[in-house]
Image 1 (cartoon, rainbow, N blue to C red):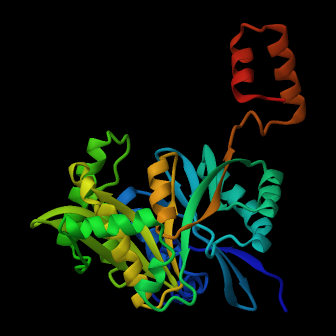
Image 2: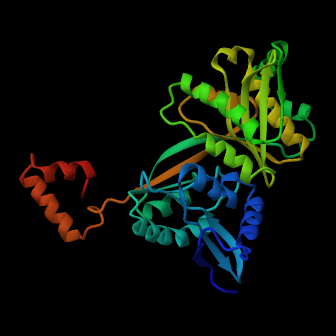
Image 3: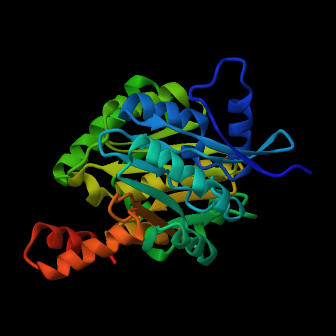
Length: 351
């Protein structure tokens, strides 16, 4: 058996390349994280001006592992998208092989930092620390396991009393959910709800409409949208991805003034019902930030808590200087505590 080999993929590949088919087949076998799909790199490239720099590992001429790097030329960040732990682009056994190549690409691109998001595991943390990554940042995400579940009524047994009550109240309030095709028109409708919701929340960063449309263009068969209505008015939406045996909830939003109608409960209900009806194993509700309400609704609908690690390496040229130069900087900083060099020393915590 040959040794595993890390290779860079010239993106986009020529039409004769079979790498795309092999790549997506491997993603599906890894439980189907949508943002590992080959098309997702095209979506990021066209809608967010990100540059794909994918890596992969071959063994005996077969693709066995993948690493979909993307680079933001504006922020100078090199990033591996989150994999939520159901599968993964960066298996622990391959991480030590990928990281040296990632460092090379980072230097070539002049990246200011490299960010890797993977399931939080002790072994992964040790490897990343060895390569100079800060591993203190962890975020919870929630997954509903549907193993052995044959009907929505069975899935409902995993819900809390609060979730069941919310579903009943959404019905009483006349909330209905439909699942149209992911056409540009329907994705624009979903985006308008997203925009209104985010504007009300005074979000600092908004996703572009081009991203929503690109999803429908590049992943029409994998994208599912659900639109919630009440009295003929569109009041909520969610966009999901059906890849492998995982149904991933990408984003969910509802008009602020309509949330008392329990719109989100109706949308979660539709998402889970789809997953059960199509024989899928998991519903990935995705990560949650500091908002306790977002965490609670995922737990109430049967989501079990897992943890995702965000590892960051700051590519500080001063830190990569030789030991002698760093020692000289430290001495000068101590000798002149009010000088610019002292301020820089304190800022970058040179040792």
